[in-house]
Length: 272
Image (tube, rainbow, N blue to C red; front, side):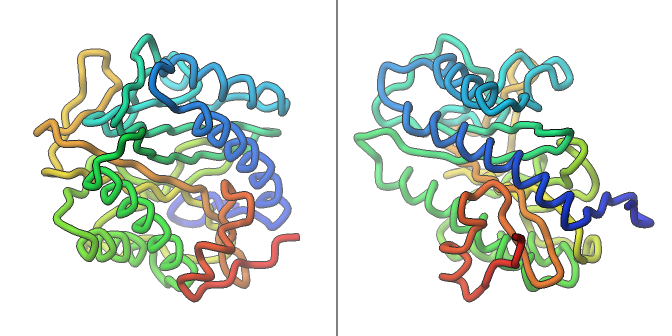
């Protein structure tokens, strides 16, 4: 069902279908995370995730998207998002950000994480932790929000509380469902526009991207890889989240987000 603003609102059964896609994404990213270590190429991570998705009977929603050539985006160090997997070898001390998605029965899931490879620079660890915390602050805000702009405000507040980080503005969250990218946009910062009204059936991908420097970005000659303009290191975190009658469910988290949200005073919705 489409609202006046062309948002695709889902029924509970459709949300359950999206959860199946979300859990495939969770498994694929977990397998990629487990494989990250010095000496592994970004192409190898892509192959691992591709195998998990295919083994689940799902398909990648990244591969072929506007000509994108891989199953994952793997972005390293000053690369923020959309890094193309290839021959690059992961090295000790790298920040590795992995973004991926899957389609099951026409329904999409999308998620991302960042990790620091040992030996870890404490400043990089703090950056990744701040990004992850901002993601969950945004999800918790969605559970209580009347307008979607409250999510961006909560993300910005969490980032500012964590340190002097840049918040990327050119790349934001989005609606998701029968397509990977749909209205509405989900900003990662406070804005005058209050955003779309939050109501049951809204499904969005929330994805803050932050840097250890400024918020400026550039796109490399490959036409995909987004990097920080000042070469500072970056982190990216993302989950697909559904709004239900009695709260939210994180579709790309195996527990629906229960553990993380409980720490923020939020109970997940009843989905089963």
